[in-house]
Image (cartoon, rainbow, N blue to C red; front, side, top):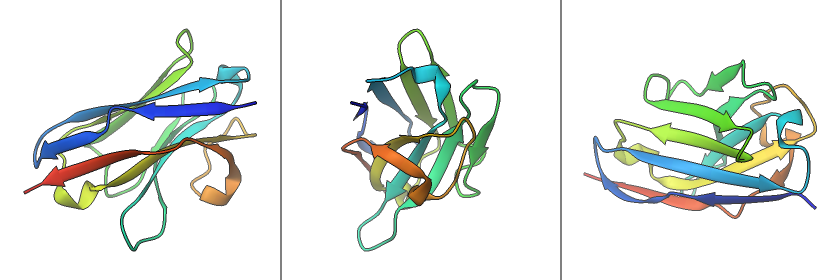
Length: 124
């Protein structure tokens, strides 16, 4: 059974940084792409960033390019999202997700496994 557990969320002032972690278990971690999505109140869930199975390819939403960085550590079965220069509009619940592809897909429908989410709140 695949399990994803996010951590690292919290309250931060605009311009600050946070690092989210997603610990995976239940299958071979390095076989599949991993992604981060987020959902703000009253809005649809949106793609934030993804990393391929090998870690050689990454993808970012336009709104976070240059500010966020995704990485993965195979030894720890963990994917990270380093978030810098945070803005109030980054406030959302952040979810880690994985599916059955080695490639990054930016649609939430492509992912079968989700974490419980971690709240990120950016104050002005």
